[in-house]
Image 1 (cartoon, helix red, strand yellow):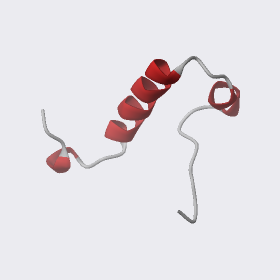
Image 2: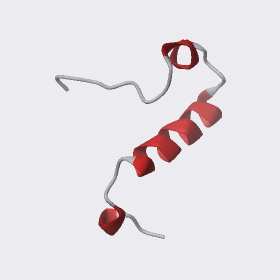
Image 3: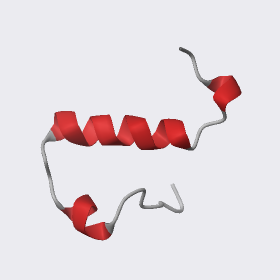
Length: 41
């Protein structure tokens, strides 16, 4: 990976609410950035 982008403010990124919550946030944010045609419902 050559480059990463933050999907939330740095303060939230540095806070660690636990893996379950972090994974939930990642899923929500990644779906916002994925073309709708490639998502399954």
